[in-house]
Image 1: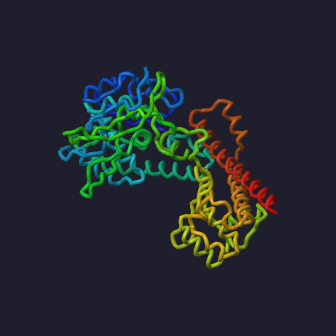
Image 2: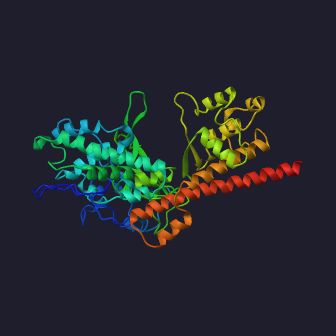
Image 3: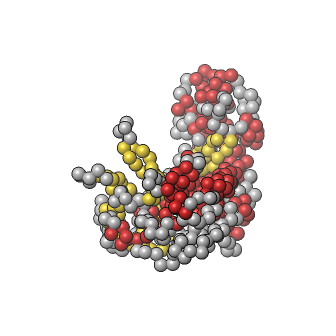
Length: 475
């Protein structure tokens, strides 16, 4: 969905809800050229910022936090009082909130970022908003795929992500019409966005700001003793960039005698001068990192590819591997029962399986192949499903069965990599020519997907050789 500017009212005191296409991933402009000092604002509101914490320009991820001096392990880096995080909470006495709340109820739960995004847009438009010192420091643009050109969305070359991007774009275009219908003919006091027009582009900006910066933390205590899960934007804390090896973490705690919750960032280990402050955003695949955060992690250990479990596809792979089995398209009743237990058969099966990531091969797929490539019902039934799903359980159904299963997965990988129109060498050549930010991200994303497939093939090929060498030695 191409980004575009909104209609801006002529009243000069309005804060326009404009949105532009991304120009630079590492140096995005902020909403205003000289925003208020975020650190001073947090301290003024009763928060704490360690004297060595400074805002700097990160070459990869844009603005980030860096230590200007050494910080001991266990030190508080940032502490936010309860009223500083931006959450979706309505004010019953505010007429504008009485409109934005029903709007948020129209957003599907999976797009929770849009719910909080409506609150963000409302505060961005509001003159004198409490959160303006924070909002004014937000990036003007985001490098998430909903702002890619149509050509660069195609350049992703990966159907599961294309589906998600198109789904979000469709939602934003449809939600724009719903918002316009709700806002027309409202009194100025009722208008949640200060009388300004809101389109898919500004809604996309708000959703991207939240998806790339918000944290889901504990909210109010529920009657059963647990806490509700509330997304919230954490000023300054959200400038910590991502690492799978973080040096800081977020804590929520209450001071003695104070019922209000504090949100802290604490040093997990000693942080040296010039070190960036890093949090782990989660053990996520590159699909999520690009879709929600606008970047791609090279050699991401949690990246994987999705395949649809399909008898015809398994038949094709096994035939290509030279281990064709008649059981994929027409399994025996006892095999079908195991597929049902794996949720790969039945009325509402989950046919999405993955290759790559920490598991290397999703357990359900591995178990299905082991079972369907075996005709020994008694041997199969000796083992629990957890054993059949485990890659660490070396050849529970015998060496020949294990080799056949691995070779079938290798053939699936060959089929999967063949679905990409370009090779990794082609992609590397395109990157050397110099391309736009969105084209570069799309190429990096598809390169990583292909690398995942190739790494799985290499790993399984080694396992096949090892199994065959053991069999030869034993013989």
